[in-house]
Image (cartoon, rainbow, N blue to C red; front, side, top):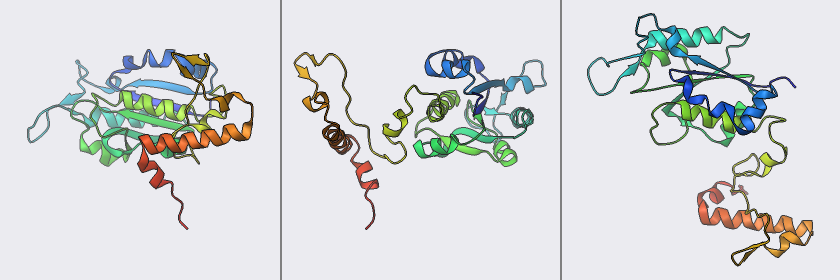
Length: 237
């Protein structure tokens, strides 16, 4: 099975991804060529002796800003490495929120470029010239976009055919398509632990009763933990 999705990660700290790419489901998918991930060190596009990637902001202020004459040539060169330039995502707290619906959209792409920021952020001309799609994984600040890139890869990857051992897993996950609520409670062996037993309905083999119990569990769990989701899932008359 040939890879259905190609990720290009553009970063000044590619070493951060060493462990991420060498463990668990992602490693298996890479080894089986079900997904491809290429790392690109933006420093390779620097033309000075010290490979300087950032500089002080004009007008003063704290922090350092990623240089336009490093990032833009890097992105453009990487885009030209394959027949299609791909969908360019800039990872920034200013972007639109990343959610399961966006992940499902990305899972239909053939190529995705993940541009990881650092320091105080990007020179604004990077946005002006590249016109990236800006994505945020939450209303908080990370040291850089690398962790956000990992979140996107993990979320999108598991939606691809042949990645997970059980193709039904995605259908019942929290926030999955057609199920915008939280997942139900789950149990496995032992049947009893420290006085807490597995619900009898899960042991009786009656599938209709089990399905109803799971639906009730979904509603109860969502009402307790995320009641806002129940309001969002109310269908208009």
